[in-house]
Image (cartoon, rainbow, N blue to C red; front, side, top):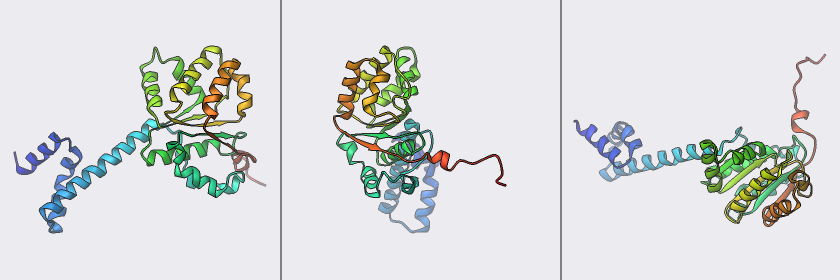
Length: 250
């Protein structure tokens, strides 16, 4: 075994597989730049740390399961007059996650609720937080199948371990008593442990109509709104305003 192969093998034994693969290039760079032994060692360590951070970011992004890549920088404040630049920047700082605050985004379809929720989630992932994104329908299905589905068990473990859970289209559909109970227990598990971003076209005062049980509704609202910022987004639907037509204008 050559000295290069031996060094690569030892790096892999030390769980530095990224550096092991890139070692020939690092050696060439060190030779070209006349690096000292210490400089070369630092190059190896810096490369390994950078690749580990990149892979961790890739893993967190995969777990988050965002339906699209919509950043806060792409959020058009000119289309949404109910949110100021200062407020958006405060949200972007993410101090509310450390404070275990929830964010409730209310408004009719098409005003940017989901875009804003995804943008906040992306910022959180980039800053090292564990994030999960689900629609309300996906969440209820996951809760109902936890006992029989390994995929649902894995997803719920990640939800309970997340620093930030994003639930899109909350209260989009009515729940039966069993579903409402499952939802309550999840909210209770996350209370004082994680932050939640909710999007909904129905105000909290109307959630009882879809949850059915007044006691469960009160218990859920008590935990969600205890520490929450409610943001009302309004205006015309961005999708309808900027829709395209299959017909050419005449």
